[in-house]
Amino acid sequence: MKFKKIVVAGGGSLGSQIAYQIAYSGFQVVIEDVNAAAIAATKRRLATWNLSYAQAKNATPAVIFDTNERISFATDLETAVEDADLVIEAVPEVATIKQAFYAELAKVAPAQTVFATNSATMVPSQFAAITGRPAKFLAIHFMDHIWENGLAEVMGHAGTDPAVFHRVCHFVHQIGLVPIEVKREHPGYVLSAMLLPFVNTALTLWVHGVAEPQAIDRAWMIATGASMGPFGILDEIGLRQVYQLLLATSGEPGKGYLVDVAHKLKCELLDQQKFGQENQRGFYTYPVPAFASAKFLTAG
Image (tube, rainbow, N blue to C red; front, top):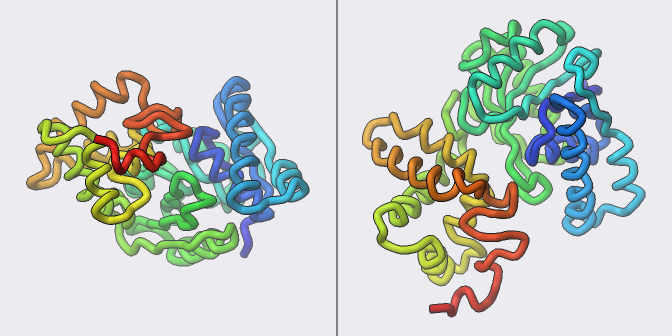
């Protein structure tokens, strides 16, 4: 059965992208957020996605107009989720905030509604019980710059109904993305689990004073021909998300060193309001980062 009404809870950088991609694919979507100021900020973000889709997807003005017509807004959760088939949670990556959200959502959502978290660092079983419908709860992890990356990771927990899992995978197909089926819970899913050892090595070189971020990126880009290095990738992922991933994995055997990495990242970037591409300030400054210049690969 096709999802008809989708709600995205949280209109931040990624939440607004998720909603835009869904609307672009022909679905009605409601963006729910805490207050009018948050909604106003979301609308500003959506305006930037208009330009991104026009440039990257050759979306015509008519297509962009229709996409925006399929997006509505709400600040009252109960009103937003009325008749909803799917609610995608994209609230801040803080466990207590997510717990409070699901406790409230469980009280007001229709019985048929499927819940999905977009968390990048937490697994569905952490919230399954509080949703009140563990069989209809799972994760859909979208990547930043959805229009470029073209995939979403779908991960259930032990109690997720397989039919719900496959229905969600079908929905991911319907919105123009490839569903990456994650068969068992794993922090970091698939893509981040493969990427983390690479960026962790780069971060460790930085923390130990072996080389500066730009030198590390320059070495990687010259040697491999890649369009960006690990620190450019970190900015793209989002430094707040990276910080949470570092904390989540630092307790694993042999990874205690990541505590120091997380601390330096917090002190030197996050505490200075440098979050990466999300707010155009990270290891690089955007929208034109140094590594995008041809001179970057020849600079001393």
